[in-house]
Image 1 (cartoon, rainbow, N blue to C red):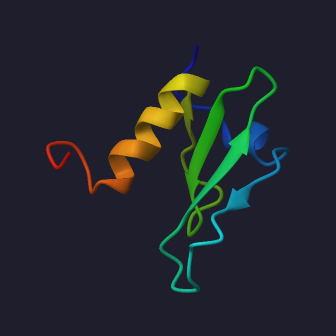
Image 2: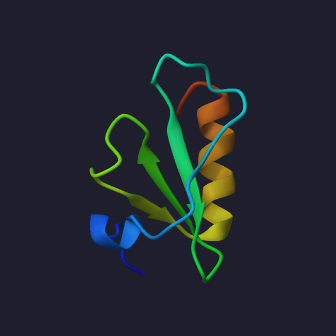
Length: 73
């Protein structure tokens, strides 16, 4: 699996921002891909890079992020 997707392909995805996000612009957006993996991008740069996580790895990513990062479990 490719760890990123081209911005042209990303434009066709349905992006969702967390309801916990404020209006300060410091948000990430997530889209579900056809194979169940997740694409993640910076809401301030919708034409910028997009990371792709396999479905199981995305849950791990969210869990670590919620705790403040690696080494803060």
